[in-house]
Length: 95
Image (cartoon, rainbow, N blue to C red; front, side, top):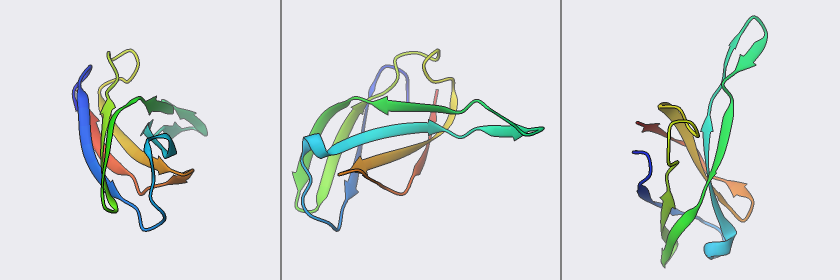
């Protein structure tokens, strides 16, 4: 994943059909803990730029963070939240 670009991926859902307004995409930087203090926790909600349905398979395009100040380079967990139900996460690296 690169800064200031579009990122497209596919997902499916076994439940009722979803529409553009039913879907959000979050990008979560897992924190690290030292001495009982959790640091670097970060959650971004990525704007959905495109959405298309192909049966129960969906293609989703999101805008990536524009600059490293919003999301420092590294690994993040990306979730699709469909009708308030989060997906399993996928690891991505932004640079």
